[in-house]
Length: 406
Ligand code: EPS
Image (cartoon, rainbow, N blue to C red; front, side, top):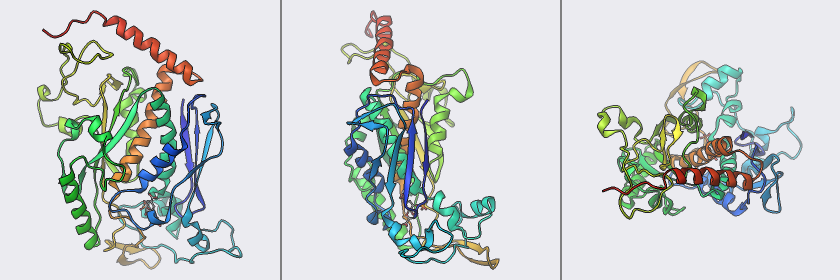
C-alpha cells in the first residue's frame, strides 16, 4: 500500500526519501515536518555533528498548494557537513578540482558493534568508510521525514503519536505503562532526555556526563504511544499480516535497537496470566463515551491482541544498545596489517536514545498509515474518512444499548 526508500551517505551530499502510496488531499504542514526533523537532532548526549546540521527536508514532488496529490513524494535533506567531506567522499574517480574539506585516511580498524566488520566482509571493502557511511544512523533523518508525512495523514484521522524515554543507562523510571498519553505528549521538545520524571531526567543527564568523562557510551529504552488507533488494523489470519510483527520489524530496523516490547513486553514472561491479560468490563457509570461498548481497566497488551488493534492506546517500547563508537576504544584488529589495534574513533554521540524514540515514532506512524490504508483504503483522504466513519457508526450501533456497570 504505502512504501518508501531512502538513499544517502552520512557525509555525502544529501539524504533522499521517496514515499509512494499516500492518498490525495492530505494537508501537509512543512513546519511540522521541520519540527520532527529538529526533534531527532535533539537530546542530551548528542555529538558535534548535530550542531553542524539543521536538517531541512525540501519536498520536490507529490505535494501542491499544501496538499498531497497521490503521486510519489520525493524529499531531499542536504548534509551541511558535505563541504567538509568533499575530498573524502567525492563521487568522481579522481579528486575533482575545487573539492573542499579534508582527505581522510582509510578506516581499517572496525568498531565492535558497528556494521564495519560485517559490512567490509560482505561488500569486500578495504576502507570501511564505504560501509559506515551508509550504515550510519544519519539515514534515520530521511525516515523521520517520511514518518512526518505519515503522521500528518494519521492526524487528519485524529490519530496522534508521542514518545518518551523511560530508561537511560543505569537510570529508569520503571514500567512506563502507567504513564498517560497526555503526560507523554506534554513533554517539551527541548526536554534534555525526553523523560516525564524531572528528577530521573537529572539523574540520566548525570549518567551521560559520567559516561562521556570516561570515553564510554550509553543505551536506554523508550516507549511510543499512539492515541486514537481504530480497532481492527492488522490481522491474525496470516503471519505477515499481524500488525505486532510488522511494527516490531519496523522498530527493530532502527540502528542499535536490540529488542522491541509490545505493552508489558518482556514483563509478561515471569508473572501469571492473571497479572498479564486485560480484563473486559462494562463501562463505568458516567464514563466518557467510547467507541467500543466495553472497557479495559489495564492495557498490558499495548493495544494489540492477535496481531490486531483492539481500540486501546498502542504502546511499543524499544531497547537501544550503547553507541558503538567509544572515545576510549575497545580492542579490534587492523584489517590492513592484521595487528591488534584499538578500534577506530569517528566523531559520534555519547547517547542518542531520545533521537531513536523520534525515529521509532516515524516508523510506527508509517506502519500504521499503511495498515489504515489496507483497512480503509481509498485514493483520497475524503474517501478514507468516509469509510472510517461508516465502520465507526456500525460499531457504535452494535453497542448502542450497552448498559453501564452496576
Ligand atoms: C547521525 C548519527 C550518528 C552520528 C552521525 C550523525 O551516526 P552513526 O550511526 O554512524 O554513529 O555519528 O554524525 C556523524 C557521522 C558525524 O560526522 O558526526 C545522525 O543521526 O544524523
